[in-house]
Structure formats: C-alpha cells, structure tokens
Image (cartoon, rainbow, N blue to C red):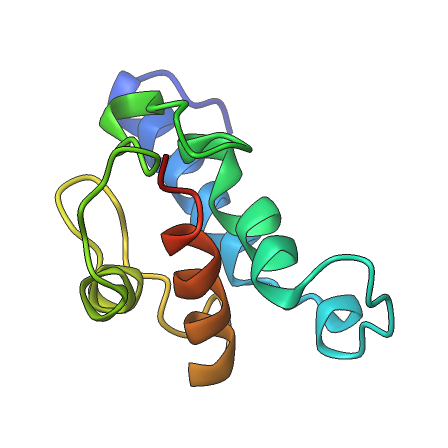
Length: 111
C-alpha cells in the first residue's frame, strides 16, 4: 500500500517518532558506567536531538536551555507535561528519579 498524501506521510513520521521514543533502554536502567551521570545520559538520549548537546540548539523552536531562567520544579513539570511543541516525556524518560536527574542536569546548563 503506497502512502500518497502529505497527511499520510506526516502520520507515519509522527507515529515512528513516538514508537521510537517509547522504546525502553535497559542499558540505562542497568548502567554501571559511572563516567556519565544518569541525567546527562538521559538528556543525550531524549533531549539533545532538539535542544542540542550543550542546550542551545533550538531545533523546531526548542527553548535555549543555556539562557533559561526556569526553576528545577518548572523544568520537571515541563518534562512531565510538555509545553508548546515539546511532548510530555512522562513514562518515556522513566521514573521520578530519572526526571529529577534530567532536570538537575538541565539546570546546570545555564550560562
């Protein structure tokens, strides 16, 4: 079956993105590599594609995390619920501890 409409391709790409994001990564759960903090690992896996490795990429309107004045609580809320074009990462990143780790890492990206 061929996909001929822009809507069809958009649906395929969106579905592929969410399927890829929902796949769990057991390597992170059982990571014994202490060279990278958990927050940095999770950020690289789930956030860097839009926000960039250093937090200032801004792909598709992603917030510049280096200049953000958000508190850790606000960062956690956005990770859990999403905001504007950013989807919720609740259940994708993992447990509350994982979200805390990412929020702490992001708060340290400030200039």
